[in-house]
Length: 517
Ligand code: N01
Image 1 (cartoon, protein in one colour):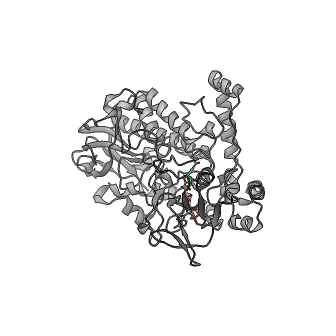
Image 2: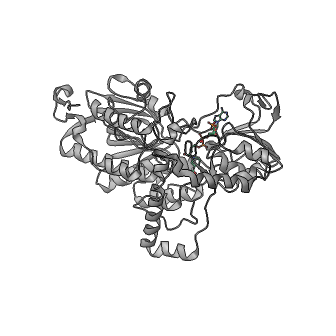
Image 3: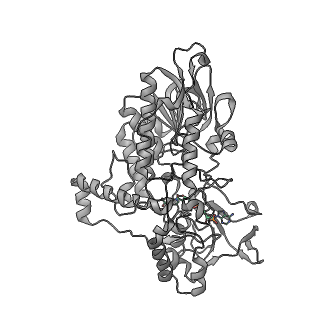
């Protein structure tokens, strides 16, 4: 199927880039697609979205591993402006989300502004022209504003294990599943027991000859309260949109009540802990295995997982949970520190993503040529309102630092950020602003407030290490408050928190207005 419908510019060769656009968006997941739709809605048509893959979808296009599904309720997992009456169940499988995104893209009429198969190679801020100079695999262009919607979970992280490159069998990462490879009758090792692994393992356990699951840290796994929607519900969603809105609102607020357990007092998560421990008892009969899957950190410190079949899968005859640390990988298998080698045909790395060392940050250089990666190495990953970083004028990040969630839908945060960017663009036009960036004071205040709030969250006090934390142990990924608070704080773009350069300046620095910090 051609995912781009009948649009010839998207089916084969890539249309050349225009020399200049007002807004260049990188990435066509929920963030980039939503941004494009809203730009067009606001009458901004001079924009382009570059996407290295061949269709929209982002993480939902890339993560096609067996069992891939959303662990956030379906009703929250759509744009507020494009509800999906067609979700078949309360937690959607990956394919349904990908179909939804394709459909929204098709119906939006903005696909003509997308360039698929085009990678963003470099963006460099040019102080003289007050523009971004962008190099892509399809040529160069300039842009007044650069929006990175490249995602925080887009670059697979392979485990740093001695000898892994020498393995002679098939190797794949959960986010790059090799569907051409038939696992039937194979001996398989899965490294990792995170959100991806708990979905993969139960799905393939019945198909493979033997499955070794390498667990470094036992996760908290709650029951998955998933069910197909009834015919009456499906009818109501399609014909009475108010009903679906009501479902969505109720689920949204129910989820928000979970926030204090993460950010104020983990004891509030006692019922979740109880349900998870019961999940272990229900799924596993062997006391030794029960003990080895029981987490030794506070629930919520890492992402809380949901599954009804994870524990029964580990209890299967052909599945072994290996908790002895991995020493090395050989050409034929995995050796643990006790010297045992388990030979396998396939190595599946369900080992997560580069989250606090985003690869795209190496490709963006701001004022003075400093890359975003280098800036964040020096000062820690941060962005004012999760969107803008000082030294990088007119660069907006969708799903920027400290905008991630453990309890609800990222689509809500993404929509908040899109509205924030649109308000910034509106004000830039209205005030004839060529460029702006947050003042040092505004960005520092924002970041300090977040880090102060982090100190008492379960992500810091819960006794675990996680992908939420950077090398210094700072949580630079999650939002430590309610999502509606984030929306309120980003509802309006406050120009006064930014240093601005006016359009009419002959020498950019001459008209630069430094705001008091
Ligand atoms: O990755 P992870 P993921 N040796 O980083 C282990 C989202 N998501 O792909 O815990 C041995 O969570 C590592 O061990 P430890 C969701 O936000 C959503 O599963 O660090 N093990 C861990 O067990 C999620 O949080 C859905 O000790 C090694 C695992 O690999 C995020 O994506 C579905 C290792 C990595 O777990 C990432 O999830 C799936 C090593 N060298 C994912 N290195 C939804 O349903 C790493 N590990 C929406």
